[in-house]
Image (tube, rainbow, N blue to C red; front, top):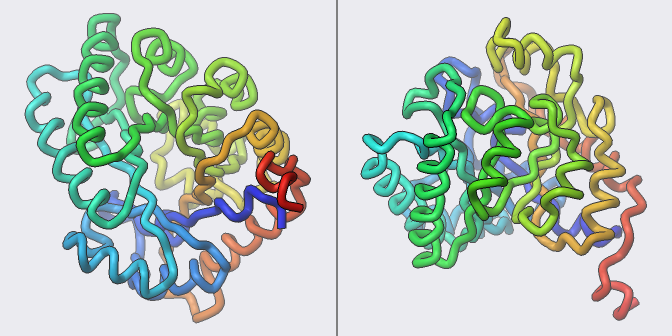
Length: 304
């Protein structure tokens, strides 16, 4: 097996589990985690707030039942508003306490406009500077829990476009979640980002995109849900993101952390039969990844 496949994790969003109201049917956690185990995945992200148990011991036990490590999760925070700083600190501490107690180490920060995921707003230079200070505060909190922060560029957040990414790189030394799909939609070439900021990458989301279908969403003419239902996030290898070249480059440079399979899905036509549904999409993506001839890590070379 290619070395990077041993660091392949799942995410509940690939099974349609999303915090957005009215997104679609949420499959039961035991089915989702069981299908991850069936596919050979050994770790998962947390998923939407409240989907998995909010008691750390219960969360840890549930993951262990399916042989899955809890590696962290996606956390929306309001970073640029001084009036929201106390609420942001409280949310970061509460979430870090839960995730770290279940064994998680990665805190995937999403810079939302407001707590209700209101319309995206462009930040001023003062806003970016305040965002950097807030990220530093969050870093300090996470240090108490042995966790690493990784900011996530994402559609409809304040870190969406190439200009946003460059602005944040300039003012903050925060680590990054390298979501190649969202970056490409926002105008940042993922391979260029590796050149610019490889040493800042702490976490990777594997996401492929059909750019023709993503265009209306990026332009604000469609919702993210509309884009997902249209198929803008496709199985790996079937879209416009150069997944193979990206993984090969990351491995060649020594990336040794998790790769999380993230194909945003929405189940809107009733619960799929056992053995069908999102399981098949994730399986197709795994089969594509098996065909990537990424270089072996130094440790693997020594022991083979």
